[in-house]
Amino acid sequence: MKRINEYKKLFSIEQEIDLKDLKKKYRNLVKEWHPDKFQEGDDLFEEAELKSTQIIDGYHFLISIAPETKETNLPEYSETISTCRILDFDLKGQVLKIDFSNGDSYEYFGVSKKVFQKLINSDIPVRFAKRNIYDSFLYRKMKKAAVLA
Image (cartoon, rainbow, N blue to C red):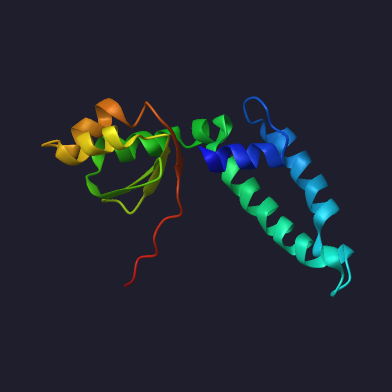
């Protein structure tokens, strides 16, 4: 949740994420902080490089959790959570990462250690996740892992 709040603050987003508004803010921030605007050796050059990287990362992250993106990807997500097995899961902070048998990975935000412990202790993790995680937490799809032939 900390990461979400940082990126929302960077883009001055207070409510739900609107993709048109986000794109406009992204373009303005990139124009303002593009490293090519500053000379190498200038005090702001290094800050601009860091800031532009943060802006790009934040933009892609916020797009991945936007309601419009989730709605577009809902059929694929529904198929994954209903037909695929859970291969692995891990909790870092309050972010639960679940890897599925089709190669998809999703991050769920705001998952407590208590919920994670119940997932670990459940006899059938996929059933526990269907009842307590999939529709209960904000999520985003992570990049698909490269499959080696």
